[in-house]
Length: 167
Image 1 (cartoon, rainbow, N blue to C red):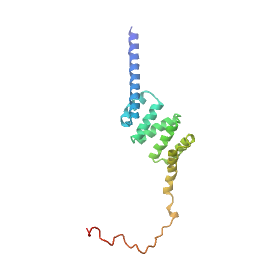
Image 2 (cartoon, rainbow, N blue to C red; image 1 turned 30 degrees about the horizontal axis):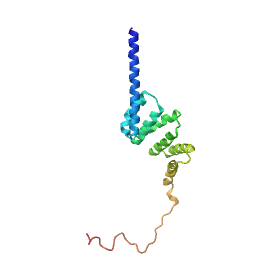
Image 3 (cartoon, one colour; image 1 turned 45 degrees about the vertical axis):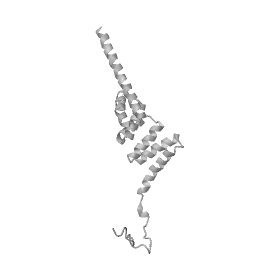
């Protein structure tokens, strides 16, 4: 008698906890669909804390990235990548997160992996080119010599005509 009551209580607790997980998963997904990422984050955090689901963690990482919580997004993406998830969407987003953190070498690696499966994606190609060209801005400028351009007519930056009657 006592054992059956304990079993019923445990079963009830399990049903309620699974219902809470599905509620938070459903609510977070709905908010993500409506692009309300700041409202989706608490629900997705609760759902991922109770159930280890790659799809939910990917949605949570996307929500973090789109609400400018780059460090949280990066840690989730890295954790999923280390667990072996190599989804093309995740590789693309991971490259964007690394670019936002200023890690252009790592971002270029992720974009290259993404482009192996999506060769015609122009956006990924442009982002890879941007990653590769960042270091061109900081190359050695001593290779160039600046020379003044002789211009006879240009003496100063002031106009010969007064502007609005000298006002």
